[in-house]
Amino acid sequence: MPKFLKKQIELTAKANFPDVYRPWVIRMFFTIRDFTNTRGGWFIVFLATAIFFIIGQFFKPSFLQIISVDNKEAKTIIDQRISNLAPIFSISLVVIGWLITNIVIKDTLSYKLLFKRIYLYPIFYFILSLIGMLITFSLIRSSQIINFGDVLTCATYLIVIALILIGFLFVGLTKVVDPGFFFESLQTEVLTEALLNARTVVKPNLGKKIYGEIFNKLLFSNSLRFDADTSGYTKITITPESKKPPSKELTIDQIFGGSSEYQLEDVNLKKITKILGSKNLTGLNYYHSLTIGSALSAGYTAIYIQNGDLLSNKEKKQLRNCYKIKKIKHPGDLSSMNTYLDYLNLRFSKDVKEGKNEYVDIMLTIYEKIYQLEDRINKTM
Image (tube, rainbow, N blue to C red):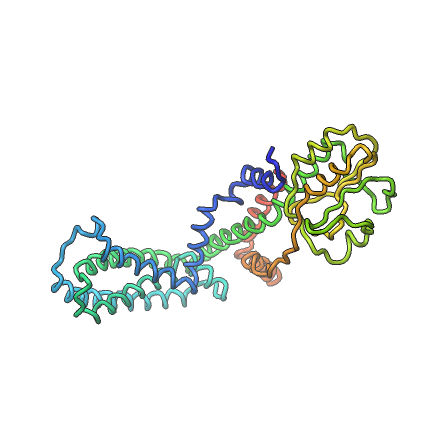
């Protein structure tokens, strides 16, 4: 067993919920992909396109040296490539405009969702970046520093990629007129949100479970009543490292009411087990259920030991030091975490009230998927 509670939670969460807690490399990839696939992702697309030209110009990889073009001739061909790209891009805009007007479900979120599924923003940004760079190279054709043969080779590769992406875009746009494609996309986003929300639930619940199992093995109970008389108990309180234990125990109202300054950062489970497990503790001993992130007040009593005289002052101090707390971090605005689920709820409620049953069965299928995910998480906890 790991020494600390946080580490044990991490290992258990990754073992039981691999789809919720994916490796950081995969999480980073999807984060960059999702950001690029928004209106604000233009910079990443532009930067990637520019880097490709820089690699071709200065590093000259072998796959870019297959085609050799004379520098003077390349300057003329670059202008032709711009002329070829412009009408293709214009036609693409016309077709996309026509298809967008024929989307069956028309509202702000549906446009946002469908644009995301067909990668409209990054494809447009890529084509615009390519045209912009070719125009720039055309304007500086008199430069003696730049090898325009390499520029043309890179541009040729990127133009081929652009044509493939435009074809992919057209295929995707033919799907946006199908309501089934919209709800399929909505289901994907809703389940993604559900997995992200599960991250805020799984670890705290796992922490309580692991923490409780440790104390249950030590024959401690979590059934301490608010009005119980604990005057004869030895109390292990949680305080910041810079402060001494309070001379006076906090009241129940102070512990469970009002504002809390701190949150639990970690617990040394191994040391707690070693100290308490080595004592022949009898009677009724209690613990308060805690997990990483639990809100606390300085002086919070974590453990009540009836025959605490078995513990030396040094051991009591060691037990207190097993709990590490820090200033509480107030969560930011989480209202956007259920954007697509909120949309689904509103759409379902509206269609049911208005008697529009055309898409109700599809939405019920999405709800069933959400329930299956939640049920799987609850059974594993």
